[in-house]
Image (tube, rainbow, N blue to C red; front, side, top):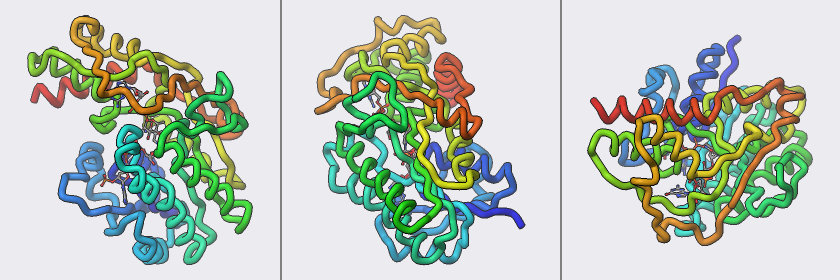
Length: 322
Ligand code: NAP
Ligand code: F7E
């Protein structure tokens, strides 16, 4: 019998790639659809799998909808990817972020504990939990120090994932993923904002790109590589926590240069620093150690930042040229 998986956040960047991966492995895939007015299905359509997944109405803040859906889906694997995931917004909407990103995860854990306790659970934890870094290279042992309402909400969800494993013996895993990007990245995140702007500038659709702090460093990988790590975690005998990262860190400034160079443009001529885009508290540098994932899951990042960013630029050029 084919396995089945239920994904919250299936309409997001990672949800779309994960659904594609699981379908390719023969899974029956269903996902949570929080009904909104905008077109939330564009990513699934982009990957050509819009009709291959079953979408079920519900909301991660609504425990009753999750109990009903998780009972009906009888999923072998539950991936909790839904979140208010934009760090910048978490300062202006701290309560919504706490409800969706923090308590939302516990709603999924609770629903699973009540109606499907033998399922395996994945929590989308984040390098933002390291925040003000306590070690130069962050691993599963590094102490956490979140710097935003988003990071704090994710840390609560992370510890509850550990707690449900230790208290109830559930198979729960937490992937501490560092930044990962793709052509399906939301436009508000800095990589996609940059690749979209570079393409627009090349096509004469805009002249400048306003950015905040471009001296920060991030460990950026490709989302398509990272969803494989999520799946691998749930194939292990026991639930566990894993850092997923490339092991390389780069400034936003350098990432911009890669994007603009690819189109024969000089980033320095177009980037304007806007103090309004600086965050109330910044995560200056992140650099992950993916050693445990490599050793125990056989996973490693395959896509360089150069390939990632130039692929995103090409995708934005293609989209805007149409
Ligand atoms: P994303 O593109 O922002 O997707 C977020 C998903 O959550 C969307 O499907 C969104 O639905 C859904 N969602 C938001 N509020 C919801 C609610 N109240 N009920 C149900 N669904 C809701 O995020 P992503 O980049 O794919 O990231 C996936 C997960 O990994 C997130 O939890 C994120 O915080 C975490 N993470 C991401 C990264 C990264 O670098 N990408 C790194 C570490 C951890 P709509 O489409 O309807 O808005
Ligand atoms: O910012 C700086 C900004 O918004 C990266 C989410 O997926 O990864 C993501 O969070 C850096 C920050 O991602 C602009 O200040 C400068 O230092 O692309 P971002 P993020 O905040 O790192 C983590 C791992 C997650 O878990 C999150 O869900 O870039 N930056 N200028 C800018 N950032 C944005 N967005 N826009 C700017 O104009």
